View 1 (tube, rainbow, N blue to C red):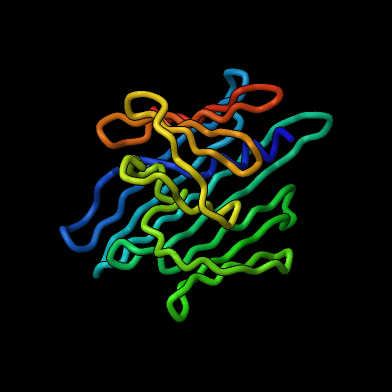
View 2: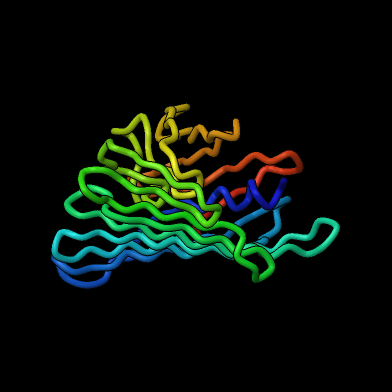
Length: 200
């Protein structure tokens, strides 16, 4: 459905610098467009301190189909010395929790769980997740971890500084970069293509 496609694009971008060399925060803001109109907003932040990098991406979308649908999504991920240590994703639709997932490194493996009661394990160390996509090109990676789908997904270059994220539902999301900064996310849906672009 449209709201699922819109929600899938919660993997966001760029940088405004504050602070010193060892303790700093990047923040960036995006608009979400559908049919040329702004239907939502995204706030992304990246903080670094003492070898720990934390990413937070929050988005709010409101669309009208037969009824108004309000979608809130938040992704958090924490990396220690470049390796994912823990992460989470929560989604609310019209104020009600609809989806949740968690991942954490425990005893030489990742434990993955969701609100649906399903759990699993991943043994490969993760260096890049969808929570990083708005801050860096995935040019050194062929697979990244999806907080939304709770599994590794493929990354495929499709043009200069443009990448397709191959989702397990058969859809592709496209990320374009300039000077190392994400300048557009393109999410094709059955009804319209949704775009995420920096606030100007």
